[in-house]
Length: 179
Image 1 (cartoon, one colour):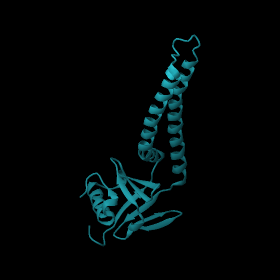
Image 2: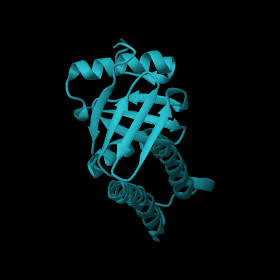
Image 3: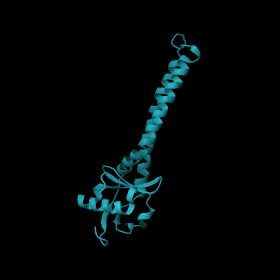
Image 4: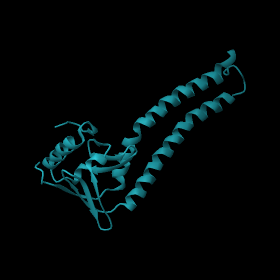
């Protein structure tokens, strides 16, 4: 890519794009919480069942099964809550987004839509990740937006884009295969 060449894409993301990225973004924290929960819940169940030398299975009162049920149903309810909150958030984001033209060049990223326009220098990006289907731009640590690969015209344009961000972001460009 020479210094004057620009990579231009038409940008029109859907709620499905945002859901995919939100799940990608939260999977590590969700996994960590699940592991902590399993360790904590197992410990609590053991303490309730066998703590202080007792054995709840020998007692005729079966309250311990109510506690087992609670600790079993709680992660399922949390999982449903997480899943539906991502769906709700993705629909809200889709409603406020509009079609845009995005230009990538040596200076940065320029976005133009019917109501807004913006320009960001490459130095403003904390990092850019590549997934199987998207490039995810992080202008700040916890703020991101996706650029699905399907918006690029061809594989050559994606390769040019990857070369550009590798040069501009260096180690902050987390690409599947660095060129």
